Image (cartoon, rainbow, N blue to C red; front, side, top):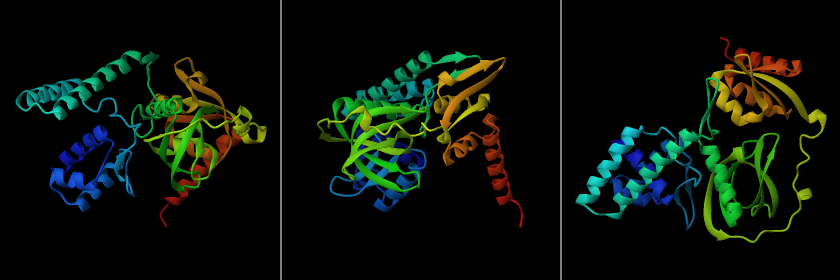
Length: 311
């Protein structure tokens, strides 16, 4: 019963993007306290959050879409047939709308499969951001809001782990050292800032529009990682298990096949986050060069191993 309600809540959020706890409580005959507990559980796998204030409610990021493979094609067909039968018996708009959305999802997944290509034994697919295709969906959302001049509400995590809610006017997307950023005017700081897209936990379109503010290319802080002491030329061996994640991180143009193995040659920011990123791919990536980066990874692994030794 619980997981059925969780799934229905997810579909409600996908359809409406923002609802109140009272709406869920009344619809599913549960308490608001239970609603918030269910939202907490959903938030482990889906970018769902609670917004306080007059226009608040339970929200889902506008960039979130159902992941590819959420249901098999036969399951989609069965659901669509069931919705058709329900609409025939009870011609309510909600059944027809749900049918159209599921049909669109099937078509999108077919297009994604058709556009995917194989290189050797590897499937080249989109990047990841919590779920399959979600980073590309986030990128599309920012592109749309830049074009349409739509103000965004975002939840952003800084490098120190600080979580803040902000309103921004996105002006231009920046790709630097294979990392995506958005150059945006921040209402909180009343100034332009460069936000790393990977640290945007959720992004929701508002009803507000903005006029583009004047800026030049020189205003965008693109000078980071240009000094030789701040970057490193690295070579990696990529295992099949980490190919898609490595492609998303390093860029497909830096990956090449030699014999039956994949390698990557790339210049990266030589900061504390580099070793963390390498370790996040586990045994799927091996540092070949430079030696000092290999040693930093070894030292970190040894430190981790010691923390698990029995006292």
